[in-house]
Every structure is written in C-alpha cells, then in structure tokens.
Length: 171
Image 1 (tube, rainbow, N blue to C red):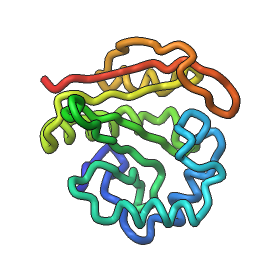
Image 2: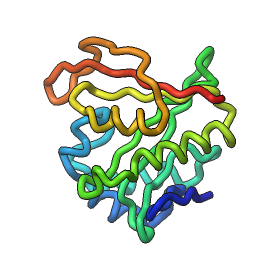
Image 3: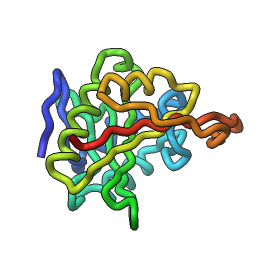
C-alpha cells in the first residue's frame, strides 16, 4: 500500500530503510517535540529495531515518508483500547531539512483519509507541546481542530510544557 503525495510517498516500512531512517531521525531538533520513546541520539541499532518491529503490520498503521525511496520521516497511528477503540492517536516527524515545505500537512491529510476509509476509526487525535507551534499549524492545515490545552502535562528534557490536543472526526 502506498499513498502518493506531491513529491513524496507514504508506505509501509521495509528492510533497507534503516540507514536513511537513522540519518534523518538522528537530530535533537526532531526528537525535541516527540515522546521520549523516540530515541536521541537515534542510533542505527534503534533504526534496525524499529524497522524489524514494523515489517509485518496488520493492519498497516505506521508508515515511512519517503522521497526517491529514502526515508525522510514517519507518520503513524496508535489505536486506543476499550471504550476508546474507535480512536487512534496520530504522531509524525520529518527531517529538519524538509521543514516548511508543505510535506507534513499533506501527509497528515493522506493518512487521515486512509484511517477513515480503510480502518474502523471515527476519530484521530494528536498532542502537540506548546513549544511546537509549527506542528499545530500542520494539524490545522490538515483540518484538525484544537480541543483543549492540558497545562503542565508533559516533561521533556527537564522542561515542563503544556500539551495541546487536536482532533478530527470522521464525516
């Protein structure tokens, strides 16, 4: 399965992605606004572990963002459980050298459409730390709406931050 964007492709992970994944993910500016489970520094071993664990996804919910088959970012959904089972949490990252080029808003739209047409979801939500207004704009451009702010909800690199919650509903 592939989703075609303007100058990029969203696809499942495959063997061979490890080197370009490590190259583009190994940047403290990329990891600064992601959960701690996204390693920093991002080692080749971490890239190998990531790819190995996502080779046989069913359903496909985590994707590589590629240009000319080189991984330049990632986007995925984490399904919730129990009474939240029709909701997934969206997360994404992009190589710093491609920030501000319109890739991520389009990628979010493509994955959102995939989620609502191919998966049994009625809601996607994403959290953004207050020091990342660019990511808030990404979500707004993709049609997500801010639903609230959880004050002092996160601690990253010793800094306490607010968490902004965005969501989109299946039409």
